[in-house]
Image 1 (tube, rainbow, N blue to C red):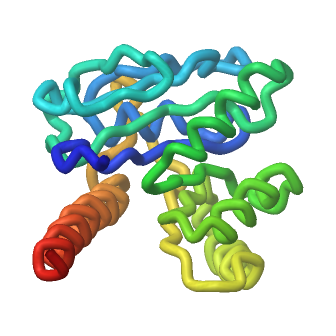
Image 2 (image 1 turned 180 degrees about the horizontal axis):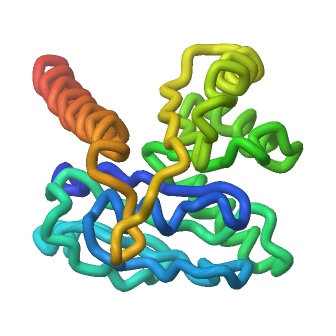
Image 3 (image 1 turned 180 degrees about the vertical axis):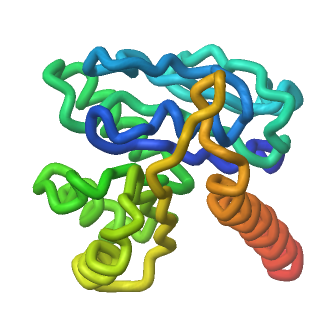
Length: 208
């Protein structure tokens, strides 16, 4: 049975050093996930949701971190690196991807063509799960070259968000204007999920 009050679960994943934790912190406007130069940085997944959603979020015994800035309809998981040197981290990352309503795959201008990244992207496309790609740390002069190439590699329409090389604020967050398009995408996915569940309930009631 589906929990109709469960938020959309967006798993933020990608290779080590791609900027996943920085993106999560920037989306919730709070330093909820550790960032740093050590690799891997995210050794355990971080689940973030609005306090009203706590009772409806159950993923791998994770304890949610309160993020009042998040709407109740969206929960985020900062997943361990897909290419972590620790097998347990890679396995857990794969499990979290299997639970996702939406994968937000974060890669960089320098790493977007890596084979490991494409194994996960192809898996997402085969599962027909909601998918978005965040291309992080893109030098302005490289946008016109990299974006068409990545779009061609994807082979089908996928929301693609370009995060330019940006100055982080004192808390290590990206400017709000940079993450706003990603927020709008997540809001739309959450609304679409709720609409789909409502339509499904109506269809079942009519059938009865």
